[in-house]
Image (cartoon, rainbow, N blue to C red; front, side, top):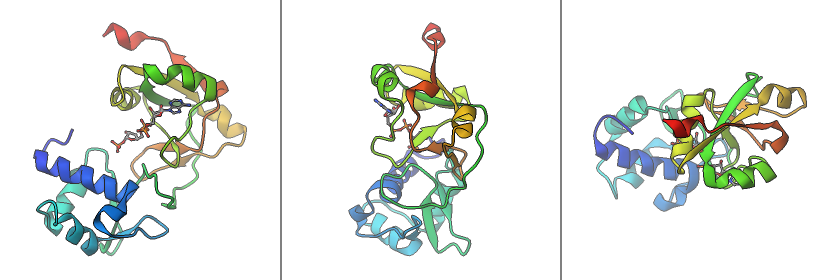
Length: 189
Ligand code: HQG
């Protein structure tokens, strides 16, 4: 994943856990907008991994998905998207492109085609701007399948879309009627 050292990847995964899902693992709280105090985060992580502000800066700077942002004054940090905890990261409502993509695993296909896309443990369904990104997301779960999402029609029908600071499209649900499965081309490769 990350091209630098494996240790940074491990620390970054821990930071994702803290800033998206379980701040309590290091005894901190996120504020209503998802921000954590940088010093409190560093103190908490340092009980498990060697870290300092320079290392954190490097993790944030080099993250290939730009998962984290600092506040303007640099004293706070938050995840740009992906939360399961109820926070409002002030995502701008944004008009989506006509088509967005969702990569998932084959084994979820029947359920998705019956129920549509649901956020499951996260606050939103995550959608990708292109097929290639969706394929990578799907492969995290198993043999991938990609859905085309008729985001333009959803938008015209009144569904809200949000664009995260790192380019991930988010929406609450995608009813099955707006989904089209990209037929099994990927399996040929
Ligand atoms: C599936 C990564 C059955 C859904 C990525 C997905 C992304 C259903 C899984 C971000 C379903 C949830 C999010 C239904 C949805 N029945 N399965 N009705 N509706 N699902 O990990 O979208 O590396 O919570 O298809 O790049 O895979 O963590 O969501 O397979 O942007 O920064 O339920 O996480 O970024 O899985 O990934 P996830 P996701 P990070």
